Structures are given as C-alpha cells and as structure tokens.
Image (cartoon, one colour):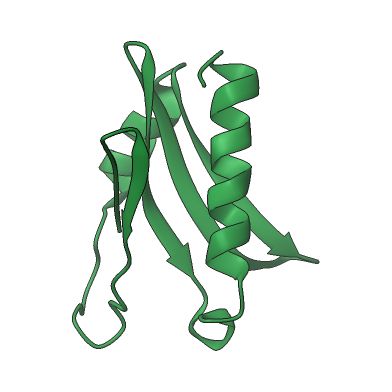
Length: 99
C-alpha cells in the first residue's frame, strides 16, 4: 500500500498481496528496531488474544509514515484495513503532533 499527496489530494493505491507474496516480509530484528525507536509504533488489532491486524506508523521529521499493514486473510475486504489506517492516522496526529 502506498499513500501520497498529489496537488493537495490524497492518492491511495491498494494491492491485494495474498497472492503476490510468500514468506516473511519482516524479520524479528527489524521488528525490534521498530520497537526500540521512540518515534515508531506498531498498532495491533486484537479480538480476545487473536491478532487480527497490525500497522506500523513512524514519525519522520514533520511527517508520519504508515506502512506494513497486515490483515488476517479472513478479514480482508471487510473494512479492517481501513479501520487500522484510520487508527494509524489518528495516532500520528495525537501522539506525534502531525496533521
């Protein structure tokens, strides 16, 4: 997923990666690096103890970067990813002071 601004409007490209990717997209040392950065968080969507989705948000200068969005296959195309993106945008605004 990529997100950018074009002439003040939001450009959003979404790809269904289930069929395109196999194997690990991130390893444990990369996760530890993200978690040790005070300007970086991983938001996790839970239902009881089941992980349903996650998204990474990091502060880069005066901007935030949202990436590594993952949603459980059985919840894809059900709005879960959109909810996680909204949470990430709100988190960046409130905790990183970004618009």
